[in-house]
Image (cartoon, rainbow, N blue to C red; front, side, top):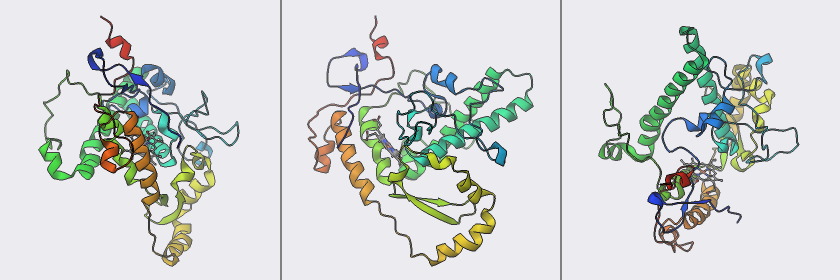
Length: 317
Ligand code: HEM
């Protein structure tokens, strides 16, 4: 199995010891996947007009919303391109094209930023592009934190664990426990092992449902990896948006009634990702992961925090 080894990095306090990984992504919940983890990426994604992010207006003539900007620099990185004039998308995180549903989520967040920036700019005509951008970015980061703590974590951890670790959001007032000195960087055991639990949630097929909860169709996840080109197919979008009420009701709903009860099989993706987890855990020095699962070598003793970008800077006197 092809598996690319993670780049190694210096350890906390620049001590000698087992290999640790370089982490290119900011560890704080600041919407970095929308804006990037460094100012160069952030600037590339900005329109520098009214606080807006760049977008591609391919569907404006149909009255539909924009897609993400195209990935014109290094277009083959993380993207399977059938022809030289086919492009994937650009966002704050290089994994935006990993699979189509992730690309869709990125599009929604870019559009939400632009919607909110337009509203803020209209309410505050005296604001500069910079102020509108930064204020919108703040609110988007708060939105991501709200989704993470109020919606995602309760589903993953359950109420008891949320309460045990004081993760439940305040209903009134403000959180007073912010600690500016806390190190938010992630331990290798979290990035290389624990948080990969998400892979075992993945279905083999991705279903497409309409906004009125009617089944439209399904596609294998494996066909959606690194090729988000269905997003360009205006016919799919038009069918599922403009004419959906008519077509869905008379054709798709009937088809849904007639088809056999759908059974999702999780096994193939779990098995494949189980192997990826063990290989990733081994190379990231996560102790005993392979032993736990009865595969892999599990030969490493220690795991350390993956370090933020530019680790050398931290070792300068
Ligand atoms: C269709 C959805 C997904 C696909 C195709 C996918 C694919 C990948 C790939 C190719 C890698 C790099 C190879 C590896 O190190 O194993 C990776 C790493 C990882 N994935 Fe996913 N993934 C998906 C969903 C998720 C979800 C839902 C989560 C967590 C909730 C998740 C968490 C992780 C983590 C923590 C890593 C390791 C990152 C690192 O150490 O740098 N993935 N994923």
